[in-house]
Length: 317
Ligand SMILES: NC(=O)c1ccc[n+]([C@@H]2O[C@H](COP(=O)([O-])OP(=O)(O)OC[C@H]3O[C@@H](n4cnc5c(N)ncnc54)[C@H](O)[C@@H]3O)[C@@H](O)[C@H]2O)c1
Image: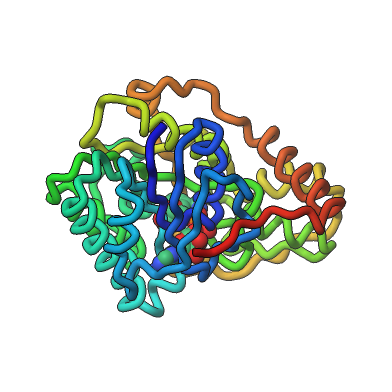
């Protein structure tokens, strides 16, 4: 059993990581300002504490003093590509400055390992696919640049680390307000029987990875001995948005014609990440197929709708 601080643990990916780490019997302390995450995402387990604090504005040293964590999982971030184009200062403060502050705390409190979430956006426009870790790093958005800068600070810090570059995650609890969650945006529109907006011609390719597979890899990253590396985490399978739409419309029994809108700045045409290195390092071999993941998402939605008042909450410290 380890003591783990998780920044951004009340968010989409973070809450699934917490669920998995609780199953592994770890003790968790979440630091989250609840800007996009929510208490409702969190389990009521006694093994979890939530500190409603901001990684950029608040002094987190007391939390490190009290919690004395073995590991830190760093997920809190400004996660929107579009928002980063309009608000580069905010993006840099949250994604770079907060990460540097966290590294200082990890150093001062002797954290054994920092495990951080980065993104496929650090690669920029792919020169080839699937993109492996040796691909040139030329981000085309401030979000990609701030995450790449975070990676460099982590590498230079001397703190043992693992950095994951994720492709497009999807699954239950993903918000619909950000463009990264195209599946949750389609999901929301389809359950409300609204037409789907597709930016560009819909021929762009994405590599969708199910959120519980991501949670499992964080669990593995606590267990393994190897450290100080950066690794992609993805399925290595590309799906065109038009094909995604076709799969989802069958599951949701949706029959509205999609609306095609102009392509947005900062959007990458095709993104497939190689998972060869991840498969070599970790004992994860079976990824949730897109069809299964979509079915699970739909089932989660139906179950939650039926048990809307079910209590999934944890008290703030
Ligand atoms: N979702 C994806 O497809 C994807 C892909 C690649 C990388 N990532 C990375 O994974 C991580 C988690 O992403 P997510 O999709 O779960 O996003 P999310 O917005 O659901 O989660 C982010 C969490 O961080 C919290 N947060 C944001 N700013 C904070 C701050 N200053 N102080 C404290 N808490 C703060 C939010 O309230 C939220 O709970 C991020 O670092 C993101 O860049 C996500």
